[in-house]
Image (tube, rainbow, N blue to C red; front, side, top):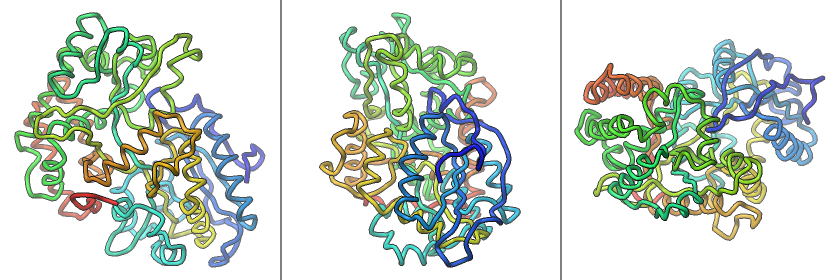
Length: 466
């Protein structure tokens, strides 16, 4: 069903904020009125999403909802848009009251595991068999949502961290892309000496932004092998390789390299950072691949400048870490509400969304990184209409996964409470309330307790992945 104010409520929004964020707002209708009886595969299917901005909502309504309803005219996909934090809160409340949307947009793999253990999500195994989903999605991403042999959700988006840079500024200054810690710090020193902030970052619009930074430093300093050992319980997060990474990030903050200063990190909104990035007052921004769909607003004619942006993989910050490695994760999930009265129709939508590779790749080309579901494809399958920078991200991440050159993002592989402490604890480190060692000690204690409860997703197998 296409967008209609007479049939559903649209939340007004100024669009995703500069660094790819969405924030809070509103109420819900229970799914008890979903049309069709159980098992019919027809009728109304309710879907709540945290897509913000008129253009983004219009794209989803026209290219996803309308396309699905054309392919499956017997199903009415009723989509309501919410801001991110509101959606998380409202879905949690609805699931607990055995109501809510037919299709559940989950925030993370660990939260999905918790919901599945509470019997709030439907077992997708029958649909996996019926639609052959194992042949359509990458196994590493499917395994993350599998508990006790049952699949409870499908991965919404592949996530990683990239290092965006002002390409025009680099050319003007004669700067080369850094290849290791020494060249990265030399560039940061030179930039700061000229009044340019080396790394733009802020948690004003998204409190959890600190976990993006810790993901970068733990992966590119501590390294994927050390992280795998800690996440599997072989080693502790109190090991020096993790403490030293926290010391390093604090040192960068103390030098004013990240955000300009600690105070500015807590005070300067992301829109201002983005604008300064486009103007060449900020050299680089460590951000997720999702930022690729917003960064363009700060460059070129739209921003009244002639500058260009590009991205690079974060260089290794320790000799033992391999170059060209990408932290790997999943940006949310889609599941079916156990309380849904129309599970079969909801499953038809999921099969359509994930099963048409050509349509999926076209969405990836149309909106950079937003629709990057984990499917297997060759370079030649990518539509020629894609922005080359976005296309390069797709191919390089695919190659890294195939070669086993990937790490772990905190929001996918860390248990829920520990993940929150990743960024809340970092704030205490930056403000001098915790030492890096004390931070890692608290993190390790919390992680050990949550790991004992079994709220951890299955890690991708070590080595080349699929």
